[in-house]
Length: 312
Image 1 (cartoon, one colour):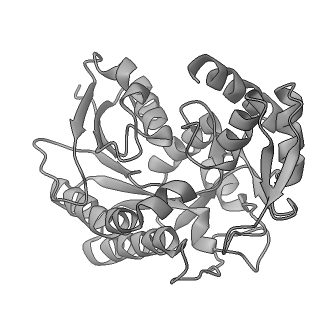
Image 2: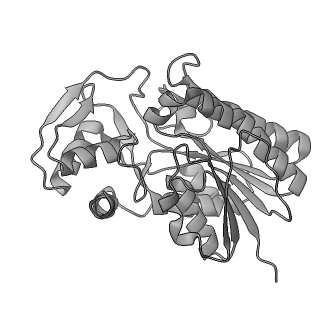
């Protein structure tokens, strides 16, 4: 019996590489595409000799040529941390627009299913809390963060257009803050930032007053949700994230405690358009995917801190 084939763009990235593992473990053949703008070869090095894994270095903002059958395309290519997309704003916009168009064209040509990685950033600095999929968002399209927010909002729009016009079998996941092994220590996101600072005895940098909130989902929980969504029959966006909500100051103190660090907390200016609240409403995921996160923040942080200590 032929194994199903999944194409994963951004497959050498943090989430993409875990997806490669998940689909191979579930008897798929995986074709991984990445141009290493933010992905890392070491994230997939353990798969390179696996007969069910193939890597192709490619910028998906350019035409994608592929031979043979494809059953599923998971589009996860994009800079995702503020530091990355502020450094590469044009590439971020291109991969969200041209890259998504190219992936949808491939899905149409191969008659394959398609899953788009979107983000909680489509909600912007939300005026509704927690954020359900029905909320349209509060986004500044011309602000510094607009390159990422609007790239993902466009990607959702063109995905739904291909579903409605070409009857493509599409899915959209809106990913909330996710953390775990294979994050880059210097990617600018709050989890690796705090862990790096705490482990190295540096002051822990909290932006603003630290009262802004975030919800942190451990990567294995997210990957399970994405896998379930890829096999579900729902075409509108689905939130995946952990609804446990913490202030950034609470989170900083927890990281210091778990790292047994004596670093002090310092306060810096809040970035422009930084969301004040972030918490997913996962009612839909519970209903249609029978999914909810299982890993507590303390357990997930323990695993993540251990990984950074071993791979720092």
